[in-house]
Each structure stands twice: as structure tokens, then as C-alpha cells.
Image (cartoon, rainbow, N blue to C red; front, side, top):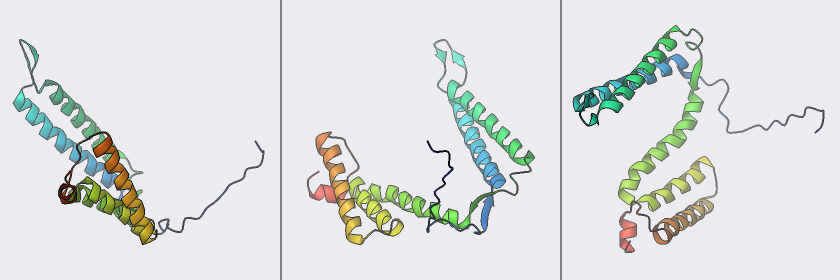
Amino acid sequence: MSDTEIEIVVDDPTAPEADSPAVTSIRIVDVTVSMLLLALAATLGYDNWRTGISWDSTGPEAGYFPFYLSVILAGASLYGLVVAFLSRKDASETFVTRSQLWRVMAVFVPTFLFCLVTQFLGLYVASFFLIAGFMRFVGKIALWKSFLTAFLFTAIMFVTFDIAFDVIMPKGPLEAAFGY
């Protein structure tokens, strides 16, 4: 190994701008997540308390272990709230900037739509659209390459799961038209 320190810097033309305005701070995200987890813990705790959290002659009732797990989750959530309110550093620290959030949403929204479309068109058609869309709009790849790659991937996936391993996957009208 050489003694010189060589650093290779590659500029990413699609990187988010450094001067993008902040959308939210770390403290707000910490408090929001802790509150949501606390609400989940309260809901789970109540439901398991209703089911039964004591011991009977055969052992613990159905809600015993889940109830105490929800108590632990509630304690961790309360700890997170206290730490978030006592931390002075996180109040001004940026959690995400507008350009960073835009990049995250560019992946989240199509993936969410993929989950919805899978219910109606089936896994393979939805996968075709997701892959082709990502390649075209996020990757800026030629349309024919996007369609070809998406078609080949979904065809290989179909052969592998449905034919070779006989795994039941969500199917839509296209698969029904071909008798699957």
C-alpha cells in the first residue's frame, strides 16, 4: 500500500443541492415518531388487556406477552420523547431538506403505487411498470432499454416463481387471459 493519501472525488450531477431549504428538524421527527409509537403501544396494550393478561391454570393468557411488550414499547417511546425535548442540539439540526425529500418521494410514491396496482393488475404487470418507470424516469435510460429490461425481468420472475417453484403470486387479468 502506498504512503500517499489519494482521494478520488466524483461529482454527482443529480445530488441534492447543498443550499436547499429545510423541511423539518430532527426534534420534530423524533417527537412525531415517539408519539406514533406511544399511540400504537397504547392501542396494543388496551387490546391485549381486553384479551387477558393474567395467568390461568394452564399458563399465561393470550394477551400476557404482547401486553408487556407494548408496555416496553410505551416506555421506550416515553424515553424518546424525554430525550427529544431535553436535547438542545437536535432542535436546530435539519432532518431533511426539500431536495432530499423530493428524491425520497421519487422512490416512495412509485413503490406505494406498485403495492396498490399489484392488487388489481397482479405482481408481474405491476413489476413491469415499476421497473420500466424507475429506469426511464429516475435512471434516465432509453425507453426501449427500460421496456426490454422490465419485460425480461418479469418474464424470468414468472418462469422462476410460477412455473419452476409453483409459488402462488398475486395475479391479474393478463395472467388470467393466459390461463394462469
